[in-house]
Each structure stands twice: as C-alpha cells, then as structure tokens.
Length: 180
Image (cartoon, rainbow, N blue to C red):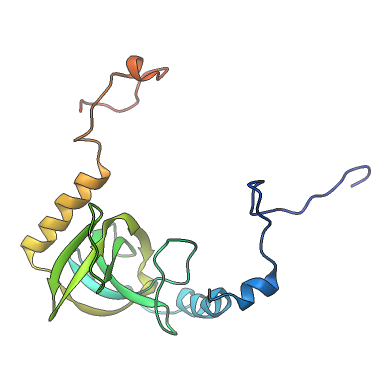
C-alpha cells in the first residue's frame, strides 16, 4: 500500500498490557502448542457420530483454554462432561465435571459412580461429536432434573424483575412473539 502504515494486531486491546511473546507463551504452564496437535487429530478423525443422549457423561477433549475456562487434563486434554442438551447427532451443550468440592449457585453436586462430582453450570459450551471420547455413564433422572432446574435458575431471566422496554430505556419493539 502506498502512503499507508500497517499496525500489528494486539490482543491487549489497549488495556495497558502488551501481548506476550511467543517465547514467554512456550515457557508458560499453558500447553497451547501441545493442544494444537491433539486438536488437529480430533478434527480430522474419521468416524461416525456416536449415539449419545442427554444426561450421559462422556470423556470429552476440552482442550487447553484461556483464562478461567475449563481445561482438559492429561495428554488428551480430556475431562468428563455431562451432555446437558443434545442439539442434533453432531453437537451438544456440555457441562464440565470435577471431583473437587465446589460451593456456589453455579455448581451442583451429584453422586456419580463411587464419588461425588461437581457440575459447573457456568462453564457450559457447545461441542462437536468429534470431541467425545468414551462414555462414562448416565445420571439418574432426579439428578438430571436437579441440574436442569439449577441451570435455568442461574441463566434465565424468569426470576428477575421485568421492566417494560420503555422503562428500561429500550428503543423499538421486541421481535419476540408471545409474552413473558
């Protein structure tokens, strides 16, 4: 480009922190480079989607993620996930499990196998079937219903105070048909 200047893209977005160098990333405890090799293998795996359904718990390649996002463990970057909502035969909303005892409105403890496990309601994410490993088991109907209710309570606005759009400062009309 004539007369133009180019700028490098910065992940810091001007918040006073420079993006880390490649060398510092490689020295850090994050395993991004290792995960890329596993992720490539997962992506190019050639198999039919397994039969999975809601309330089942599967090992899932969660990966090496950013900040507070839930990471996988070990060389396969896997951890147990609950199939919370199946969208189709290729994708689902998964909620991660941990054996660490956690307390808060975004956690639900369930008895699974011989251990108590905690499900993190705030770390749900959509997964492709290729991230699924082995099926571990299935929750009982009552436990799954408890998780469902806690998820709705945490994420839905049904228990929040509703302000009409004009009082909330919203301009225009809602495109949603029906009522709250």
